[in-house]
Length: 270
Image 1 (spheres, helix red, strand yellow):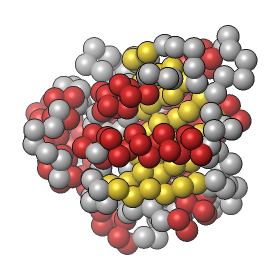
Image 2 (cartoon, helix red, strand yellow):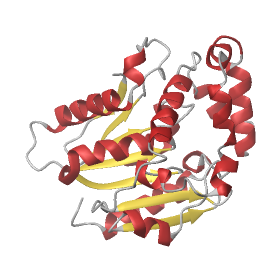
Image 3 (spheres, helix red, strand yellow):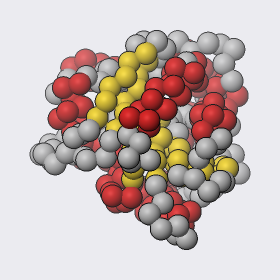
Image 4 (cartoon, helix red, strand yellow):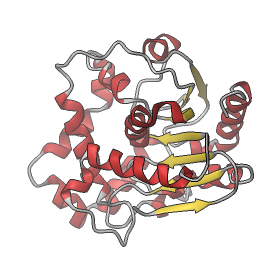
């Protein structure tokens, strides 16, 4: 598993990006938090140009298991080492499952423009969310994945960022992996979610302190509400600021300030 690490003897922050990025989407958070934290920013399968993942590598349980192993390796020689999770987009979905595995080892988590698995599936009766997520249907058209990977990676990337309203001068346009294999991961996670649509959602709430940060101009997901968060988390906080889906890039000062404020309030945890 490919990753960036900035080590210091301090609490570990694990960063996991979403689609169609790599760990560089967190560059402004890395630069800030590496001053007083041990940083582990991970590339998802297929999101590093020199990686060649197998189909199995894209399966959620395999990915979660590998992440769990890697994280535990980083804190294996430190008793009671605090672990903090930062996720963006699909990274939140995956880290939610990692948090379920590591449970009490997680001090707190920050979800940016994303949410946990149960929360996402809990929106299955939201017509507004289905309309916003209509593009997922395109991924299930036979042959669409290969077509995009082989011929349309640049165009699709521009469309995604264009829909989100991201500045055309943003470094994001140069940060997405050229191979764009991440779309296979996206499809794998979409299929996993679909299997849960008819199942009963667990009533058990997460006890991990969780901060949700969304841009007010989010184009792909419904904004979180205090009521929704309280349905899934015992200790959750909602923060809506100016910006869009990549608010961690275009409003990173506000995002980082919100995270540090949340950390300060949760001093006992971190």
